[in-house]
Length: 62
Image 1 (cartoon, helix red, strand yellow):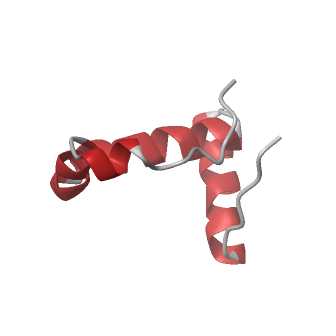
Image 2 (cartoon, helix red, strand yellow):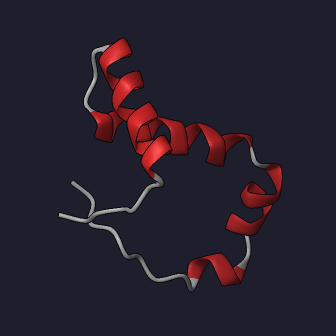
């Protein structure tokens, strides 16, 4: 299973938010990242470039 390192404060907040919304911490991180990615217009433009297509994946998908 892939793992990601977070600052201790961030990890605590992820766990607290997960408890608040009654969801697994993995779902909280997944939804938060998808939200950020969708709002970042520069990143959306980057995704349309050949460079984005050359990026290797480091995480497994379920």
